[in-house]
Amino acid sequence: MQISAVTAALSADLVALGSLGDEATAEVAQRLSIAMTAPISARLVELLGQVAAELDSTLTRGRVEVRLVGGDAELVLVDDEDIEPVGETPAADSDADARISLRLPSPLKVRIEAAATSAGISVNAYIVRALQRPQHHQQPGHRRLTGYGRS
Image (cartoon, rainbow, N blue to C red; front, side, top):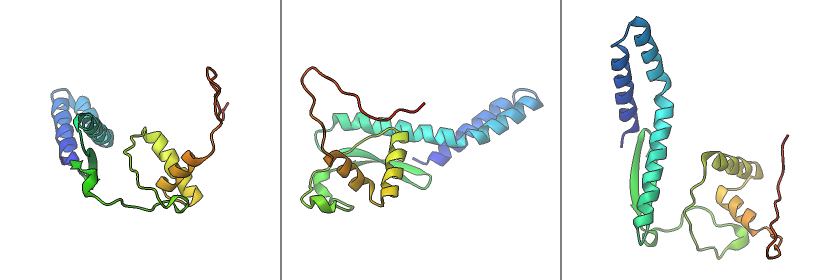
C-alpha cells in the first residue's frame, strides 16, 4: 500500500471540496490538505496495525506484521518456524530462544526506546532486564501499587 498515494488522493479530495466554496474556503481547504498529510499517514498505519492484529487472531500459526519502507506499507504473513531470530541475545541469558510479538502504545514504545538508549543497550535487552528484576510477591487478596508520581 502506498500511503503517500492515499494521502495525496485525500488531500486532492479536500482541495476539490474546498473549491466548491468561496476563495477563503478554498484557501483553508488547501492549507488543511497540507497540514493533514502526516496525521492521515499515521492513522493509516494505525489502521494497518489493527488489521494485522485482527488477522493475527485468526491464525493458528505465524503472525501478521506491518512493514514500512519509505512511503509504502505492507502486511506480511510471517511463519515463525521459517525465520532465524534476528538481533542480539542478552549476554546474561544466552539460552533465550522464545520470541513474542508485543504491541505497545506509541508513547510507551518511545519511553522504552529512550530508556534503552540511555542505558546503552538494545530495546530487547532492556525489556529482558526489566522483566528479570526480582518482583515482590503479593499476598493473596492484597494488591500493591508501586511507582512514581508527578505533581
